[in-house]
Amino acid sequence: MAKILIVDDAKFMRMTLSDILIRNNHEVVGEGENGREAIALYHELQPDLVTMDITMPEMSGLEAMKEIRQNYPQAKVIMCSAMGQQRMVVEAIEAGAKDFIVKPFDEGRVIEAVNRVLS
Image (cartoon, rainbow, N blue to C red; front, side, top):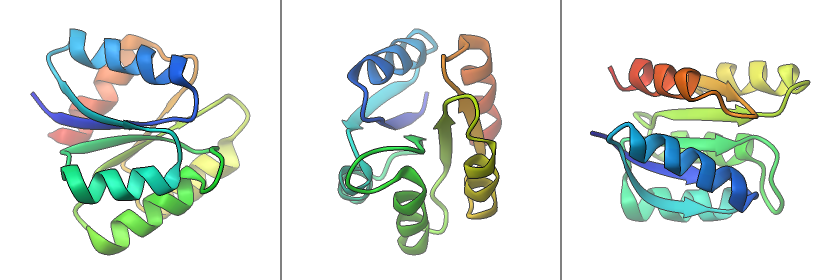
């Protein structure tokens, strides 16, 4: 069971991901709505894994991930993207994201990504 931080500006997406993770015996230790919250929550909670939306207000998931990984090189981040954001996904992987999942979420794919990144 992993401690996971979910960051997405859409409450519905956070709820959906949270339900999937809890159903699969993971613990959701926190939720954030933007990149700034992601950085503060990561520092406070030190989760095993972060799921991070790429496109958010105030600070993008990509910027937040870069800052988190600068301070915590061991941080494991899975980026979440809508269809059609391939360029940003490639940039995120190059910047250190461990995997990515596409919205709308497919439970099997989410758990596969989480298990691979944590192993």
